Each structure stands twice: as structure tokens, then as C-alpha cells.
Image (cartoon, rainbow, N blue to C red; front, side, top):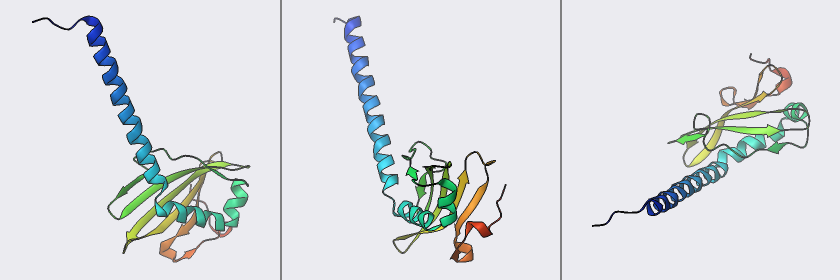
Length: 145
């Protein structure tokens, strides 16, 4: 019985590598698309857009960056709990919008929304907190270092 030549083994390894790499890329893009379509992402962006102080701080126009599907520490859904980090870039500043959400009776609800501005000593601004059962005006909130 004759073995494989070196060139045949290189060809098999190359096609296998291309196949595995392609499947990884497809999996990553599928996960990213699923995260971007989550209903609480849109709810969080709506809450941000209604907060005039946050808009002033970031500056218009605000660009929403593509989610990092590989960041499973911030972007995940487990059962009825979800968390997400949305990168924002405004005219004045850029920052991250952190979202905590829960699902009750087939409907997502944003429990907490926090804006962290880059370059401002990593200060956190609370935009929405369900525990207080109302939207918060950032000008009245003290920053949490």
C-alpha cells in the first residue's frame, strides 16, 4: 500500500484549514447578527436618545459601532438574563453603553443603562435604573468613580 505524498498532505491540510477558518468566521458573524437583533439593544438605544445630557456629552451625530461577538463577558444572553456593551462614538466623546436586561413574559425590559465616557477618568453615568422606576436625568446624578 502506497502512502500519501508530501504535496497531497499539504493540500489536505490547506483545505482543512480553510474549511475550519470559514466555519469559525460564519459562526462569529451569525452570533454578532443575533446579538444586534436583540430587542433590548433597540430599547437601550432609545433610552439613550431620550437623555439630553447623554446626547450633549457624546455630541451628535452618534455612531453605534459593530458589536464584538467575541466579548462574551459583556455580550451574552443566558435564559432570561441579558447583558450588552454597545460602543458609541460621538462628535465630542466616545464611550461604552452598558445594558442589563431581563425577559419577562416573552418581552425584554432594560433594567439598567450605564454610560462610560472614554477620556473622562472612566466615569460612569447612570442613564436608566429600574430600581428607581423612572428615567434619570444625568445632570442630577453624581458620577460613580
